[in-house]
Amino acid sequence: MKRIGRILFCLLPLLITLVLQNLVSIPIFGISAILTIVKNYWNNMPFSEIYDRLISLWMSSPFLIWISVIYAVSALFLFGFWYRKKLAADQEEVPAASAFNIRIVLAMFLLALGLQYVTVYLTSFVGSLRPDWMQTYEDLMNTAGIGSLSPITIIYACIIAPISEELIFRGVTLGYAKKALPTAGAIFLQAVLFGVFHMNMIQGIYAAFLGLFLGYVCEAGGTIVIPMLFHAFFNILGTFASSLMFYRIDIPFFFLLWLTVGVLLTYAGIFLYQQGITVRDTIHQPAD
Image 1: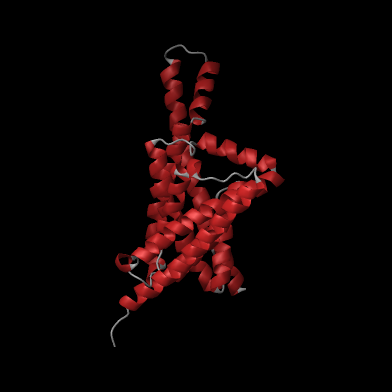
Image 2 (image 1 turned 30 degrees about the horizontal axis):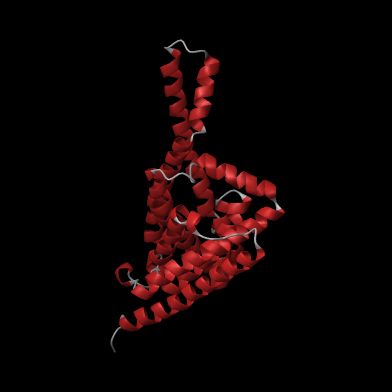
C-alpha cells in the first residue's frame, strides 16, 4: 500500500501543472473579456460584434502563446523551488558547473538530431493510422502559434519550455518515482506522464517516446541540466531546421534511408554520451 501511495504521489506534479494552467489562464481570459467589453461598449458597438472580437482575441496565436509563456515561467519558479528544496540534494550527483564536456554537448546535439528524424516518422506512422489525431494535432499547433517564428514563440519553445518541463518531469516527477519504483520503471512512468501532459494523442505519443531518452540522459548524467540542454537542442532543431531535413516519407527508399540516418544518429549520440560521462567522471573523481 505504501508503494501504491508513492506511485500515486508521482501524479501530483502533473495535476499541479493542470491546476496552474487554469490559475494562469482564467484570470487572463477574464481581464481580457472585461477590457474588451468596456472598450467597445462605450463606442456603441453591438454586443454580437464585441463577442466576435473577444472570441477572435482568445483564439489568436499571440494571445495563446503569451498564456503559455506566463504559465511556463510560473511552473519554472514553482517546480524549481520544489526541486531545490526537496529533491536536488539526492538527484544532483554532479555540479552543474562541471556537468558538461565537448563530448556530452556534441552527444546531446546528435541525439536531438537523430530523434528529430525518428519522432517525425513515428508521428507520421501514427497519423497514417489515425488521421483524425493528426488533424487535431496540426490544428492545435497552428492555433497555439507554435508553428510561427515570432520572437516570443522562439524564446518559449527553445528556452523557457525546456527548463520548466525538465524541472517538472525529470526533476520532481522522476525524483519521486525513483522512491517508489526501480530506476527503469521510474523513467517509464515519468515518460508516460510527460506524454499525458501534452493533452493530445499525436504529441503525447512522441513526447512519451522522447521522455524515455530524457529520463535516461538525466539518470546517466547525474544532473538535470543535461536533459535541459538536450530538450533545448531538440526544440531548436524542430523550430528552425525541420524544413531543411529530408524526410521524404512518400518514397520508400528515402523513407528507409532517413529513418536509418535517424537511428544511427541516435545511437551515435548515446555512444558518445556514455564516453563523455566516463571522461567527465574520471577527470572529476576525488583523489584518494
